[in-house]
Image 1 (cartoon, helix red, strand yellow):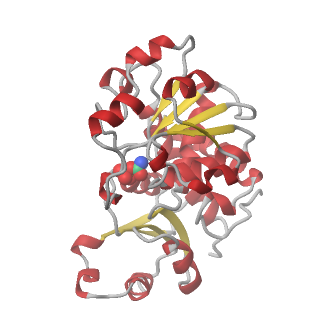
Image 2 (cartoon, rainbow, N blue to C red):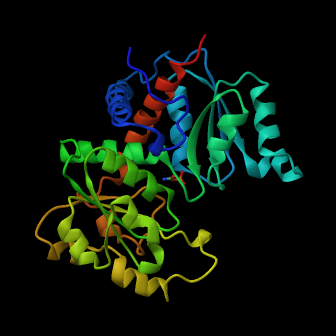
Image 3 (spheres, helix red, strand yellow):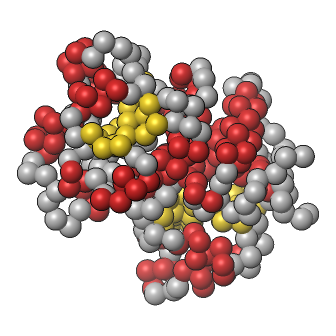
Length: 310
Ligand code: CP
C-alpha cells in the first residue's frame, strides 16, 4: 500500500510530488464516496481527532470536522476563545492535556508561524497544520490544486497560475506556490508592490503589477483576501484604490479574450477583491473548492492514520 513520505502534514514544502499525487488519487476516491446517498465510511472508526483552533475559521474548521465524521472518527473540538489558554496555559500543556484523553491526530490552526512544527516535536500525535500565521495552509493548497486540475481537466504541468492580492500576509499564497511548482505549473503573483514580499522572486515566482496583463497571461487566477487584521500599518492608500487597481470585475474579464478560471480561498471581501458578478459567475469555482476541501481533508487524515499502529 502506498504511504505518505511524511509523518505529519506541517506544510507543502515537506511533501514531494508522489505525496501530492497520492493525496489527489485518494481524494478522488473520497469525492465519489461523499456524493453517494450514504456518505460515511468506517475507515477511521477507532481514531480520535482533536481540532484545535487558536484563530478564527469557518471553512477549514467545518471542513475538517465533516471530513472526520465522514470517516467515522471520534471528534473533539477546541476553540481558544472559550478555553484555559485565556488563563495562561501554554500550548504544550493545553495539547498534552487533550492528548491524555487518548487523541491520535491533532488538527491545529494557530497564529504563530511554525506552531505545528513546534508541536510535532513535543507531543505524541500526528499533527495537521490547518494554517500557521502567515506561513503555510497546506490543506488549502491541496484543495486548490485538486480543484484546478478538475476545472482544467488536466494536470498542472505547464499551466499558468496567477495569485492576486495580499501575498505578504498570506499562508495560502506560499503553500500554493510550493504545490503548484511541484506539479510543474508556472506561477506569478500580482498585487501592490507593498504586499509582495521581496524574497518571492528567489522562489522562481514572477511578479506582475498590472492586473490586466496578469489575467491575459494566466489559465487560473487564485484571488486572495486583503488581510486587514494582519496589517499594523497602511499598505495602500485606500480600499477604493486597491479595488480600482487589483479588484477583478466583469469589465476587466470581458477585455481579455479567454475564459480563465477564478478561485478564492474565502472568506471573500465582496466588492474589494472580486465583484459579486465574478464571484458568482460560471468562471468561478469557489464553491467547488469548498466541496473538494472535504474530500482532500478526508484523504490527508486517512493517509496519516494508515501510519498509526493500532
Ligand atoms: N480558507 C480558509 O482558511 O477559510 P477559513 O479562515 O474560514 O477557515
